[in-house]
Length: 374
Image 1 (cartoon, rainbow, N blue to C red):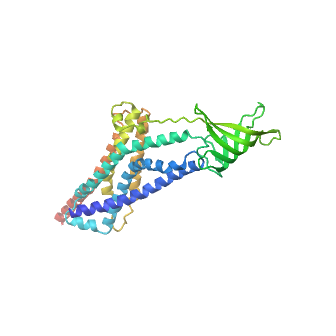
Image 2 (cartoon, rainbow, N blue to C red):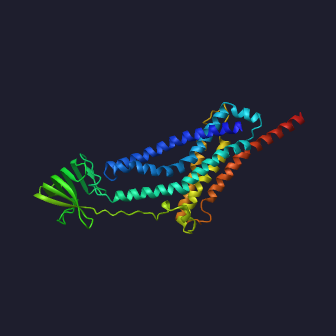
């Protein structure tokens, strides 16, 4: 029991450290992407932390198997390097016993991964989809940042306001540049309309339409490079803003509850179900592979097998993704699905576990025969 607690602690501590580092790396990259969208006015900065929080379960379900795989390799590699495994082997610790000890914390990680995959990740994806759909319904007025030129989603309009009231209902020193089609069919260039105003405010009508009402400004119409343009001074000018239309896509397979996936025979639904089932299975299979691969010679160093092991893991994950894509497109039967990939790597893990004991027995037999002949 003492040996089991020691090995489990080493594996779980290394697993936690590796998983935390991987999570920070992945979340940092995704957060930078969302931050850039917020800077462009596509997203409200106030929802960034909510989006990242809801995305954590989806990140973790992919990180945990890799974190455990690397944790076993690094933890046991250190024990082999410092000859602690040699001492344990001398006291009767076999490869199979070491594997059985390792599978117990791996089973806990697999249960956690299953909970994330079956429950938390679909809920998180559903919440993120709802937030993003609500953000799509916002106008550039709702996400406007004072003192910054801001482009609309299609890039056809650029808006600038020097000041914005705390209630986001009044603008000062407004600039709007919008592309338009020129009236002359012979002209190939696009025309541009520029609006400048001292003040502006948003008005919402009963039918839900929104207008940006500008006061005391000018409108410039023309084509870049041409001297033919017109200037209009106005006291009040209304600019129609896109009408909000909040749509929550809760019917997509990533947002469906696991219970809803069970009763469907559609290939894409079966693909999503098998992918969720694959996450905890992946944890157990990579544990079976990692234990024998962690065995290193102290003279060779602990990182000798790390690169081949990572390549083997990436091949496993790539084949799973490829099989999922083929299942989505109907190229393989749902009855076959992702299971052959798991079966192949399960056989690889069993081969690695039992190959060294077989080699040792053959070496002992050869040594006994040589001793008898001598």
